Image (tube, rainbow, N blue to C red; front, top):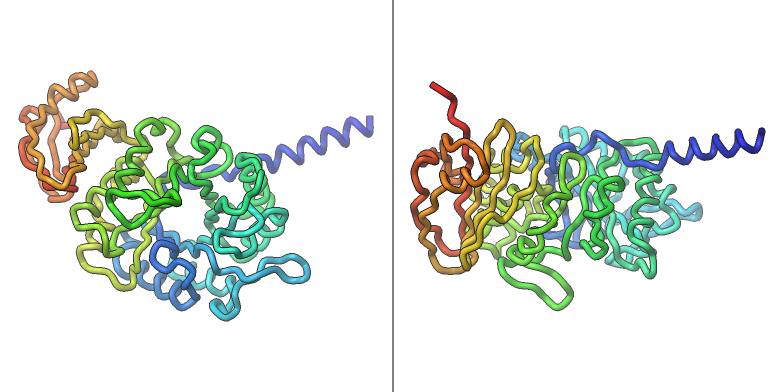
Length: 393
């Protein structure tokens, strides 16, 4: 009997920790990450200044809340195996930095790796998952980005599940961002393990390109999301990687298209530019409320590619309250004329045809679904529309 009771207790304790924190990331997380702009060249002054900027420049008011320190914050482990921050770059310590970010009404994110070392050769969490999770919880961390370098022959699902359990046992609700680049199809198993998962290799700062180590441009990442939208929803999100908006390579039309499609995917919106020093146009792109509302819609449905006419694609997304979003993207560098009958399109979806049509980048109503959408989309640009159901008179 004692053996049976002990076994039952072990099973109960095990099941207590075999889960992720529920109730987090009910909408796609929004915030900022240090990597795209600063890579390893980070320090506590930059992070504090970024938090100051986010709190005061309109980003916080628009919904951005996470300040995430990526790779290179850590330097080693002490004699007890505790992870240590680089004291030259972070002389005040991570707890102090977390407290500062919290003082701005924001949340703090940190980075680690499921392997023996991070992508930049700093200590990984393999074999230290529960110890690291306890330390992150003691610092007040709110978000963990967990990478996939130096993993050897580890099983991805098992490795990420171990850290999931470690975070849960540590007792502090932490959003868990799985970053294994889509290699092991995390959309098929990530729902019960993390709150978001990277679907592709790293984004690179270009519109239409890829490089020899697997980095992908905006269009290449979009192409990889045509079949996986059904795996995403409130509390578990497909993550096409961070935004390259404001990093000086994409044109303004390309940045609009980038932002629009991430919103159509209900993707996490993690800015990757220097938000301390950005143009008014970049800030307007990042904080376009009407576009952000599409991303943050409570249904959390990812867009479907509805039609493709050569370089013109039409993406469709159901919204709450019976409304819809459509996104016309021009993949080519030449203008494309459109004359789209949305009335016929939405009738095929067996919905009512009485909708007001609004251009979300021009912030104006442009007609109703009784009329065709007529116009020209410049090269590498987008027409993003919201269809709002007209109330009966």
